[in-house]
Image (cartoon, rainbow, N blue to C red; front, side, top):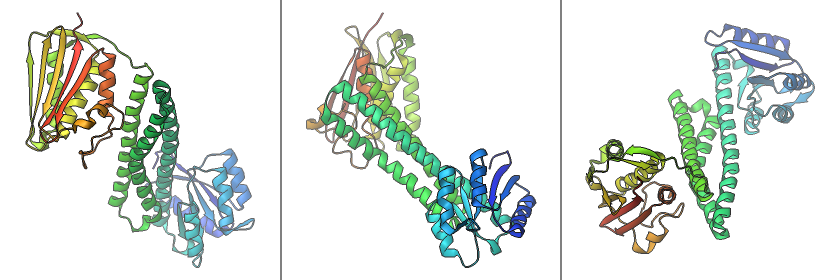
Length: 385
């Protein structure tokens, strides 16, 4: 709950019951509440038009509105404010229908005590916030997918690629969206049956799924900028051996649980070179990550750095699952993944990003791979004095 007082709009025509609810709220030791009480739905709608409230406590039996008819005007007037409905003992079906129609919770008046009232208000606010986050994420996703799709279509001028891109992006977004929808559904419909630990787990799942979608959209944005020629390139003098050593050390930490042997070697006196650190990081982190991801536990990855014919050569070799020869030409297309990756997770964006970074640095990238034997990826960048 917020540090500021929670502002409640209480719509209840029975003065005795309204005073009892206000007394319960005054007894709360861990929360502070401010209550504005009105006796008519029309008065409540007027208040919502002039002030903001954190939650609405709504009696379903009012002089100017009966039952579920009270919900639509409130939700239309204040769609982001959670509603807890107040019912009589024999109105369980009506209360459940109100929750299905959009209320966050219901309370039976004769069963209310301080603890139940505070818990209901708190979780109604939390559930509503989760649902609003989901709606905002969905809208943002729709807007960003449309924007990035338009950029890619303009850059490639291929209508077929547009439809494939949208289809694959929608597929990859669907999994985290399903996770969010399932978790929020459980929080909304099964709150009374869930332990505090379970509720915390569901909120963690929602946050993780949103983070995954944001990461996917960042990758799409990167590709879109590259295709539109908007990928920045800032050359600085870089200690290449030290830089690569740091990336290898980080990769070893990530691969520690697989007991993978990651070997790094450099040849020649490379010293400091002119290069874009951000683009080079994208290239090497993605290639090292792929080599590790597609290698068996206890396997080996060799990363070799050398200078040859005024070029800097980065070569990463693994003895993993390999790539079918007929599919190697498509590896650098966004969302494309080889047919033999099985259940190994991935978005198919990594190599597309690598390709764009290499091209921005005026370099070349090649792949030599055999299914079941492994893969060698070679990146050649011009040596800039």
